Image 1 (cartoon, helix red, strand yellow):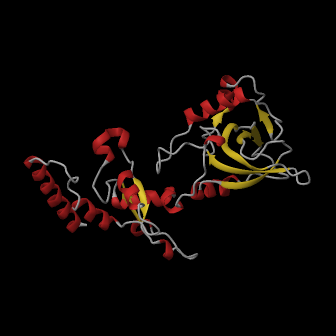
Image 2 (image 1 turned 90 degrees about the horizontal axis):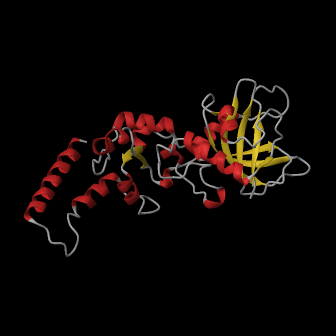
Image 3 (image 1 turned 60 degrees about the vertical axis):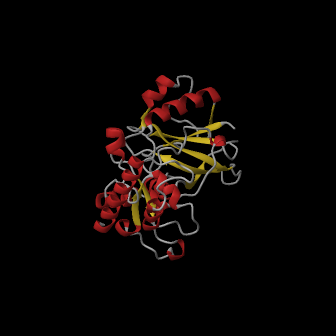
Length: 281
């Protein structure tokens, strides 16, 4: 599938305009936003689409998406599932693209839906990967655009666990230590682990009505990836932090394992410490 380039002039005052702010909010909340983009193109569903700024002062690579539906002859538009947008002012400058991908015509007037040759797309993907940071919520998830769309499967995520504003409020209240096991990434990995923790949404699914409003302090808790995965081993309602703590206390060793007196003492100390922490919470 041939990737395409979609140009956006933020200075344009007439005709169709890319609703950047609302689309950015939707992408952050749900992982992608469907956009009907005026373009006459033969791009097929599943092809990568690169969003290019073409304003007077803002020029460069701004975002990535995937073609969802082919162009309609009557409307002359593509449906693009935009899955990542950079903040305005933090786009990859056109000068970088000109230096790294010199064979593509990055100038003004680029028709929307212009195909991108496979060799050029590999270069664009490399530039994109160097400039875009992994998600704080899930750093092992591929960054949209760093792998071909054909190599990925879209999965739904809990938007409450991904919301950046809710994350800041939750972490400010609870800290970055795991609520279940107490693991702290900064204490173990130093600067690399500073501020990292996953969030778990503890509200049962049956309570998520249309008028539900998230409380980041009471509805989200910090969990390390191990405890987060174990919480979701039960569906539809995951294990609660309290249930996981009880499971940890009840699983001091594996069946058939030979445990030394020193290990038994360490396990007893751990249970005592965790019991004290639980009473304080």
